[in-house]
Length: 441
Length: 62
Image 1: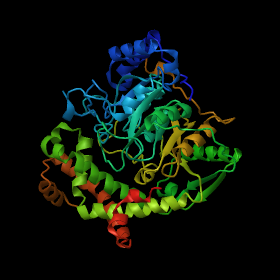
Image 2 (image 1 turned 90 degrees about the vertical axis):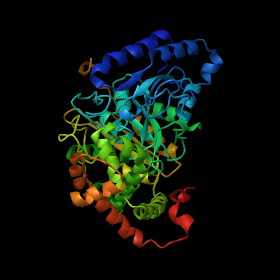
Image 3 (image 1 turned 135 degrees about the vertical axis):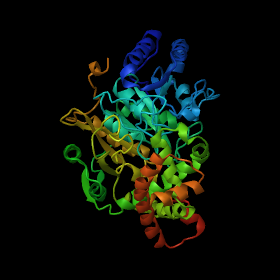
Image 4 (image 1 turned 180 degrees about the vertical axis):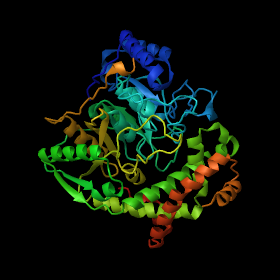
């Protein structure tokens, strides 16, 4: 595997990275904590390493930000929650961060997120909401809001986010970058604050698919080949899911254009009924609520007032799910997972928009109620499938639109390689999108 | 679910939330109740195939 394109191998380069972050922070709020001293020491250490060591490190010199639910040794993990104000620094790296540093990455700090990955965007969290670099009056999506916004703004070439029902893919879509949710269970979650453990995964957000694949390979500790022939591949469109929650006209038009582009590349694109779409979303809702409540119940009983109102209310809903309902949902999940596995006997990949709409306002108008951004992402979280979001257009307002590929469980390379194939194909205009930095500096 | 019913459920769960929270949850719980109803209806039709297979969704992985 070759070294990354974004080598930050010496002090001047890491200084420019830290300067970009500092300049953008007052308006974009992408970082909760920046550790410049650590990054400088790390850059100096890497610069002194022998050439043969560098060649073995696929992320040599790459500056990376980490969502603040993932432990970085020496830094507190706050989850953007007052529950953890004053928390002691993590004693050791999460498995993910240990692998990133072993691969030569430079961790520059902890990124903004919705409180405990549950509550946001909200104005009563310890840190103010991150803003979308494409339009700073807009929400960057969540819950890995800072990760997507920081990559979109060019502050770091890659970041690590977490995804339970769409929390990597949705902000990636809103911010015009690539976000990859690996298959559930393939990347260890040691040292990660949980939301709903049977759904939680962590994964990369990056400017392009090749970088996302390189970071994924490190997180998985396995090769991630993305060079594959896609001539004659079978791509399914889950029509039932799109009629269950219709995309806005702008997203629908961009998706149609992407479909035509895939057909022009030689793919066989077929409509699939996907009639069980409402079942997937209902099942997800019951399982996610009850698991999150189970995890955070004691905190909710003792310190509900320390949580932002969205997190508090979202978690409290889980108290209304009975044990029998949770077991019913688990049994239904088993059936839906088998149904999905059968679906992939006839196709290679599913393709659909990432979210029905473009980025919304920075905060909900009533402070609480958000439109449902995740009807296209939750079903695939429920079955643990790998899924990637990549840009597929800009709205008339100049806001990014995301396209999603979903694969069978364990075939992470398929979705990444098809995304890479599309992203690098002739005539595809949506690779490496960059907002105008004058918006936030 | 009415606000009174909700207050009882939250008290049983030992959750002390504000009136604003309860008012919000009374509305938000409707979509949860709908989801639960869908799950109950579908799960009723699933034939038990043994405890392990029926409850371990990861058993479907290759």
